[in-house]
Each structure stands twice: as C-alpha cells, then as structure tokens.
Length: 109
Image (cartoon, rainbow, N blue to C red; front, side, top):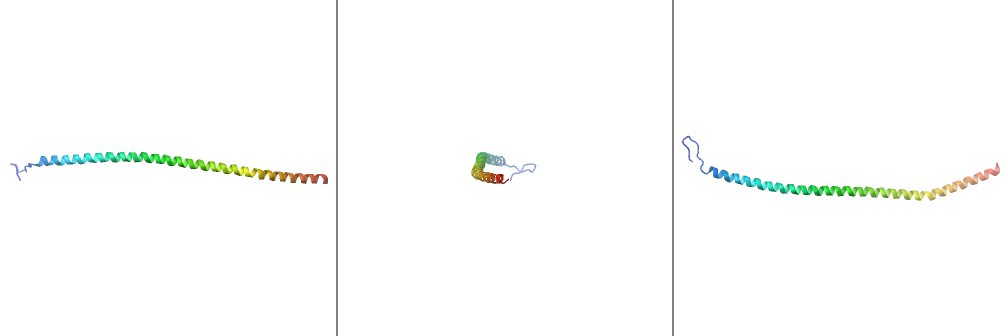
C-alpha cells in the first residue's frame, strides 16, 4: 500500500471503482423505477376493473331488489283478485241472509 508523506494512504484505483459502483447503483435504481412504473400501471388497471365490478354488483343488486318488488306487487294483486270474488260472495250471502231475516221479522211485527 502506498502512503503519502503525511501518512495518508494513496488510493490508486479508488475513483475508478467508485464510478463503477455508482454506475451499478444508478442502473439498479433505473430498473427499480421501471418495475415500479409497471406495478403502478397494473395496480391502476386492477383498480379500474374492481370499480367496474363493484358497479356491476350494485346494478345486479338493484335489479334483484326491483324483481322482488315486482313479485311482491304481483302477489298482492293476485291476493286482492282472489279475495274479491270470495268477499263479494260472502257479502251477497250476508245481505241475502239479512234480507231474509228482515223479511221474516216484518210480517211478524
């Protein structure tokens, strides 16, 4: 090892080695930046796809709720339609029976 007159070491190939190491670090940095750019682009694409999927799920849920509402309305309409004839018949029966009772009471009174 070479030493100067004041006792310091003289580094002959030091700067060349430092430049090589710096170039390697810069190269690694650049490759990592490119990899990060690709990962971010992939993340952005996946976020867009997830947003589209969530929108599709919400639309499906809304459609299912609408179908349930329509089935409920149809069921209510059917129940009302089924009640009317029965109800009308009962009313006619009750009115007829009441009329008969009234007519029976009228002559007796």
